[in-house]
Length: 278
Image (cartoon, rainbow, N blue to C red; front, side):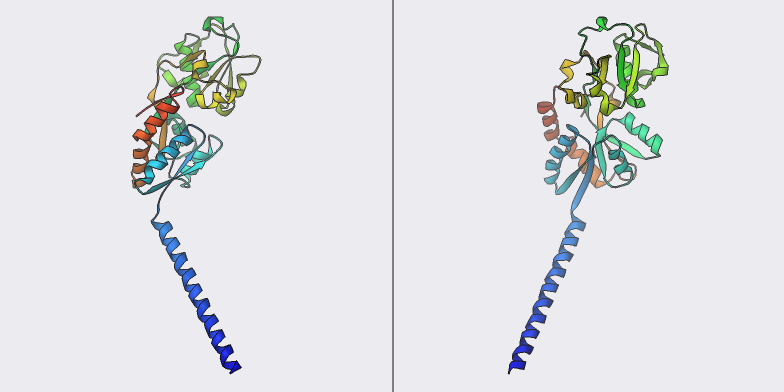
C-alpha cells in the first residue's frame, strides 16, 4: 500500500510538472508572438524640446496601435550612429545640413522626412546691449561644425558685422569672410559647449540655440540679435534612412509628429523659442 501511495504521488508530481512546463512554454510562445506582432517605432533624440515632441507624438501613435519608443542620447553623434546602424528607425534632433554633413563623413544614407520646427537662433552678449557697442577685436564664439558655422556667419552678415563672399549664403565658412571691419576674433567651439562661453570674460558674442543657451538661464528674448531670414533647411527635422523612408512605421511617425497635438504643444509650451514648420 505504501508503495502504491508513493507511486501515485510521483505520478501526480510528474503530471504537475508537465502541466507547469506546458503553461510556461505556452506563455513564452504567446509572449514571442506578441513581440513579433507589436508595432514598435524606435526614435533617437537628444534633449528637450525634441524629446518632448517624441513623447507627445507617442501618445498619438497609441491611438493607431503603434508604440513609439524614445531612445535618448547625450551628444550630437549617437542619434545618427544608431540610425545608420539600424538600431533605431528614425531620429529627431537635427537640421538637414547637419544630417548631410554626417552622410558625407560617414558614407551614410540618412534622409530628412519632415520639417517639424524652426528654432529661434542668434547671438548673446553679457557685456553689450547694442551692436554698435561691440569693440574692435572682440571675440565671437561660433559653432565648430560646418553647417552651424555657416548659419552663424550669415546672421553676423545680416547685422553688418561682417561681409561674406557673394552667393555663399548660409554655406559660408571663415575663409569666406571678405570684410571684418571690427577685426572680430572668431573662436570655434563645439555646439554643446557654446553656452559656457557666454560667461567667459573675454568673449563678447556667443551664437546659440534656445535649447543650449537655456543652460545659463537665457532665452531668445535675451539675445542681442536673432536670425532675421530663416532658411527652412535649418528646421529641426524627422530623419530616417533611405531603406525605410517609405515604410509604414515612418509614415505613421510623420503623421503623428505633424499632428494637431504636437503643433498645439509647440505653440503653447515653446512659442518663445521656436516656430512650427508644418
